[in-house]
Image (cartoon, rainbow, N blue to C red; front, side, top):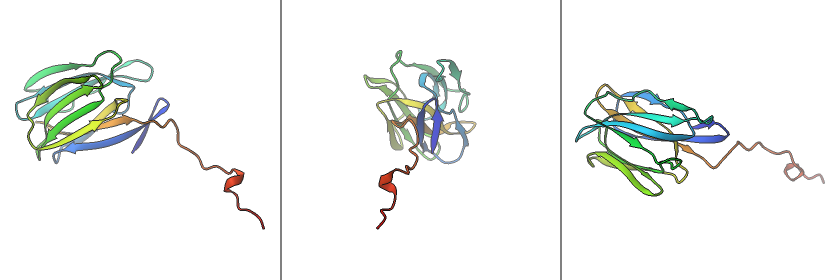
Length: 165
């Protein structure tokens, strides 16, 4: 799936996670500024993300999942995008999340149980989407900043015309 934000084309990847829950989508933004995470020793309860949009305004997305368990804030270094997200999930939901930049790991939450997944892109991520229920963050996906800046339209140049005999 493709999304347009600013002048870039964004690609939706995932989500990985358990079954069930209600779909949600934060949309595409210029960059992730902060992530609020609630978690227990077994599951990620919720995430809430603060973004900068393409006009450099702050956008606060709704909390995805319940506010419960232990609560922490992930601060991204100024103008340093999150470029890798490692996680684990089982049938119920996301059990572990780890956020990294090109400079290394920032933080991790939860327990490495279940099936692993990884999202990585050296340009960073433009937003999150996924599923949640009243108890857990069930699944998590990302919007990726692509290299493309526009769709290519078919050309009617002379090289694409039939040669006449």
